[in-house]
Amino acid sequence: MSETLDRVMEALAGVSDDEVAAALAVAGAPRPRPAVPPASSPTPLPGPGSASNIVSEVEWI
Image (cartoon, rainbow, N blue to C red; front, side, top):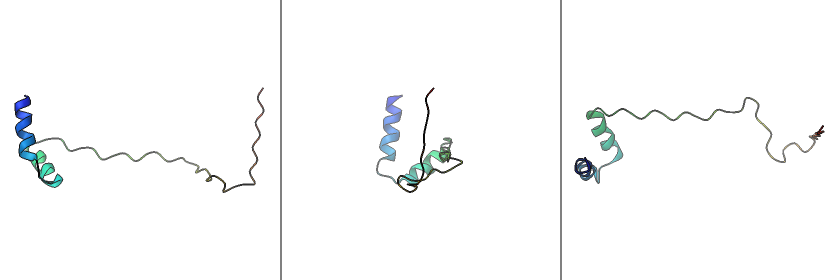
């Protein structure tokens, strides 16, 4: 198996990413899934120092 991979790597050496993608598509390789964007907070928090009038107190029982 390593000989086969070596031949594939030699064949793809020096070609562009688009050409590699096209070669993999022709070979029937599955396409990579698009990245899932990170979930955003439903309530955005203020940046540091942007709300100096906010006072927070916590009482530990």
